[in-house]
Image (cartoon, rainbow, N blue to C red; front, side, top):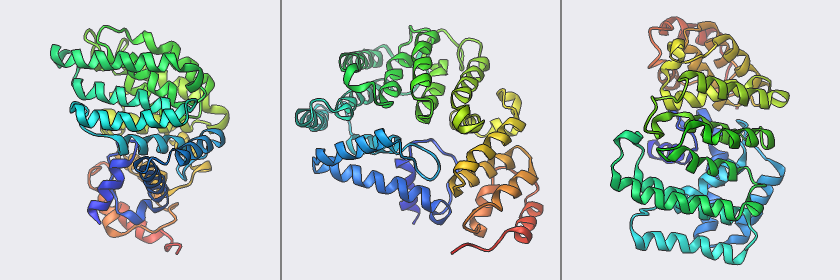
Length: 359
């Protein structure tokens, strides 16, 4: 069971820090796993017609998982996982690249096929560079990185007319922008503005923009860019505003959720680490759950409330779950947020107030 969970979470597109048992996240993770398996089977069998059908459906209908994530995001995550390999090995790289070339040959106007061609190049570039700060990256690592990232940018630029109707084009286009040490943070802000205007509800772009805002990718700046946390705060506010008509303050909660995967969950324990406004975070969580009352969202938000020391919000959220908590789940939720919330007291309230499981 543990191995199964690890495989599912490896496929997940977000760097999540909470690992619970399969029943806890059943609906969301089953959806993601089903899409991932279907994509992996299709690319391994070179069933490009199926990949075209899936990507066109997810792109045009903007279908979402039960937690509110675009299924198109999960689709591309499944492709990346299926095609991932040792790209420094020329034979392995050539084999993976040729699969995508055959896809392009079969569907020369396919946005997804050309996007994966560029994506393979960005993945190869990062394998040469690694994920260390720019100042800790060796000159040798920069050489291969710059070579393949420039090829990726050229691919994205040359085929823009085919690809930019797909929001993944904007997400990928941020990769070259965030990656070169000599680049100023501001070089990608025009792209961010354009993407937020055209595809405001494509959450993964905004998440990738948070990653882009980290100045660890640039040699001459501190950890979080010019203005430090002000840069992060500005981006979160812009993304929230762009989504407000559809999501209320939901994007505020989602952005801080993602930021916790970059900076650590202590941002909820110690608000001064960021510009987090807990009252606004609570409104944002409620706005997410109005549309997507999924146990995946509920349990993560409950954990953040626990870390923030908001005992009542923790209890209220966990009482919203469709599936009752096991004792193992409770222990995992509270394991790292003590003594902010008294564990025994909170668990006692849960046992008293929580409804029976809905089977």
